[in-house]
Image (cartoon, rainbow, N blue to C red; front, side, top):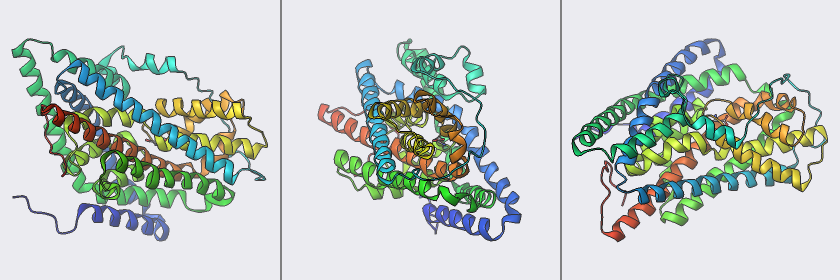
Length: 416
Ligand code: ASP
């Protein structure tokens, strides 16, 4: 039997994070050492992303026995992603309109924004199909890899028995190997998280808040409500389980998301933890989570909406109801299109500013606190993906047990 570590991993991780804040505040001169540890940890995580996403999606599709159950899983996932992102956006919209943090502020843009990112639904679809799968893998382009993996998983299922078995065994072996390496990387998470937070606190400091304090806390309030109320309520409503226990089980990926500000880099930990700690099946986790890390970003969506309305308030622009609807819809699209990397949301904001004819320099107003907000919104993004996987897994288990079947390819058992 495996020996349990004396101090639970989540305590080690929280201790690493707190120590990082303390060191960042009192010993900023040694922060390059923290930066070194943090970057090492980040690279270890990133190293796993591509083979893990590919093998987990292929295995997820291969173990989904029929096209109709695959369609059902896809539909549930999309409905969950779109509805929680919309709930998040509306929460952000409510807070920023209620508290009006931008009204009467005298802010100056901290940076000139030149780029006019253009972006549409058409772009999302086009970018989904790789023109070269190897270059997509080499540049870490997740959406085209997901697309190719879905096709590969589906067509492995229609091959002859011998080829099907060979490829399934190969993918399963790669997948199991990635999970083992991820398990090892998790052991290093407390040190890596310590380093990342140490460096961020030391290099960003707290002085940047200045008159952005009110804006910062308005967005944070929205994120807190979505994180601690909306998502837990949904989990409880659909699974009747204790959502805070689930959060505790998911503490390693949540704190990692917070300290790396990257849902993609956190993905290996999210998949490993949700299967081993929260008992979600590989079939669901392998499909829902990689997709979620790329297209489901509740925290980003909430922040986009709140930040754009804040910018309008700060410039003294009145946004009509119609314009606010445009903000809501574009914030949804932008959150789908944003990559799971640090500060992707800030870059994508120019798309919404363009759509409602606000000055692009508005991005410069909020840049100073963006690094901190990114930590909170990324943790929210990862909690939403995980909650979705848990809810969908629960509903799939119920369906399968009603049909008297057990899904193939499961490697984890559901929690009682
Ligand atoms: N950093 C976020 C993520 O990786 C994206 C963003 O909002 O900038 O999920």
